[in-house]
Length: 254
Ligand code: ADP
Image (cartoon, rainbow, N blue to C red; front, side, top):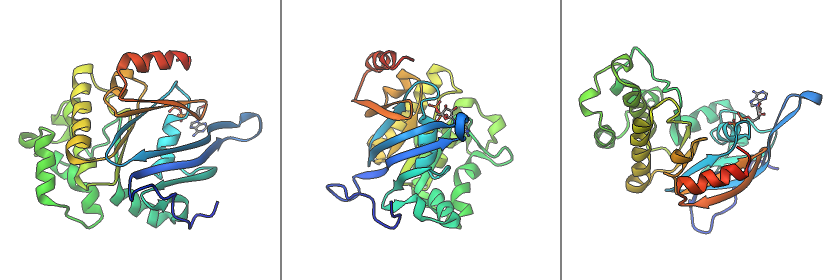
């Protein structure tokens, strides 16, 4: 596929924040070949919270990494906004990840020597952009970190560290946030707080979030749940309960 074409035009402008078209990712060669993604076509609507679920090894993380420009496809295409990622050189891809994409990982990935406030601002500072001060203050307040911003990560609980990571992802007002098992290291109460906040970032601030999880309760916070099995999309549910998701996962053999 030519990489200088625009992604498929949605029915109204910018209703799709990111997506994949016939995305295939093959690891290894010969007998060791693994098709981690096997022709995935999916779009993620702007202003929605989407969860990607599937059994272990089904290709969820590979899909997320390829959508976010952290890994390259073997064939097919991924796009963020109007941009096909394969059309970008390394420099442009780095710039896109810094300006248009936010990340939240299971391991909070904070810099230990920087305060919460500095961690939140770091990605923007690296891009030579101070960010929108009023917005950053709003995010810090919303995430409940106002009296913790001068603490270093080691002085914060796991839940507070993940709040810093979510605030960092939101601070630059990216087109889309990709979250990979963001509550995987947290107890269920703290995890629920983070998921509540992510959902309110979508509902109140219009943020777009795509989250990989294997936890049906975490996925039930999403507006839409997409199921992946053997590197392929295997159905979806809209506004499902955790029981409905669990039932669907059982059918997928997890
Ligand atoms: P999930 O996130 O659903 O657990 P992954 O996307 O991590 O699944 O992996 C999908 C498949 O690709 C698995 O079979 C996994 O072993 C394989 N895989 C993932 N990353 C690599 C890699 N770097 N090298 C080889 N195989 C890989």
